[in-house]
Amino acid sequence: MRKILAIAGKELRQARRDPFSLMMLLGIPTFMLLLYGYALNFDVRHVALSIQDRSLTAASRDLIASFVNSTYFDDAGRLPVELDPGSVLERREAKAVLVIPEGYARDLAAGRAATVQLLLDGADAQTATTVLGYAEGLVAQQTVKIRAELSGSAAAPPIQFAPRVWYNPELRSTNFLVPGLMGFILMLTAVLSTALSVVREKERGTMEQLLVTSLRPGELLIGKTIPYLLISLVATVIILLAARVLFGVVVRGSYFDLFVATLVYLTGALGSGLLVSSMSKSQAMAFQVGSLTSMLPSIFLSGFIFPIRSMPAVLQLITYAVPARYFLVISRGIILKGAPLTAYLGDLGFLLLYGLIVLAFAWRRLVKAEY
Image 1 (cartoon, rainbow, N blue to C red):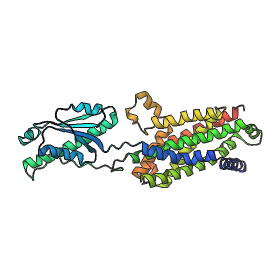
Image 2 (cartoon, rainbow, N blue to C red):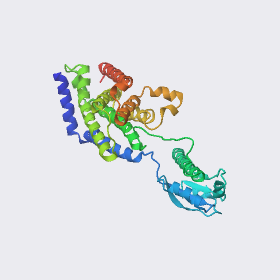
Image 3 (tube, rainbow, N blue to C red):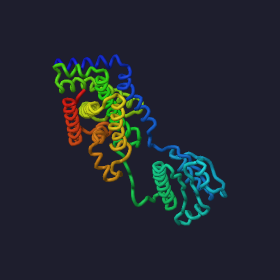
Image 4 (cartoon, helix red, strand yellow):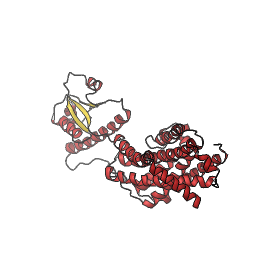
């Protein structure tokens, strides 16, 4: 234990004397949370909506008001009847155009189905899909209102639809993204910090001096890992505080459960960094390999941004080997749902297994490596 503490103390002193390393371990996670937290936002609000009202009646104005007053759409101006509404979308003067035909009010008064048209800019398919859902909901509400007015105040729709969203009632994408950001940032910084630490010893020629001492490979691994594990846990606290203050994300579950899950997740991430360092001969190579093996899977194959169920079958199989996938499920469950860690023992078990495997491979390569 004394040898392990000596190695850990040396790493902490070296990290303290290296401002760049401390900035990468503590400052970059906060910066990345700010950058991605504000830049990645799937909430669609204030969509520019141009309106071509060919009816010019109280009924058409009522429909327009339901769109504009919903906060989903902003009135981008009225279009002349003779103007082609598609030209507005081509010039990007609006993201959507609502076209109300001349006979709109007449059809409603006669009890017939009235037709309106919504033209959407589908260049951004995700935004267009969201906007289309908003429009369908507004039209459905307006339909219920019109039926009640035509049939009398006592009339009611045949189905009482009362949706209720749990865990994220406001449907804020920030609440959905912050747990994923935490997993992505911790994986990236933990892998790079340990990888660069060991490779730095190689480049300076001090690794040979460590290996000829009485240190065992396991003691060297643990001594190298403990300081960066502690620093990564401090970075986790900073991320949670920044998420609470800046984005209003509250941890609804147990902080202890979240700490245990993060500790297991970081163990695997630090082990991956040691494994990368054993295969790299320079810091530049370690940075490239570490970034490739930690950043890309954590973003694209973890369910952080893209749903796993919509991926091709081959990629879905590959995601089972990505630790960020399991940490994402656990962190969202604890942070958003307030669920206990016992509900995710399977995911936690995989993270523990992953950490043991990568540490075993790193230990084996450290024993056989020729420095």
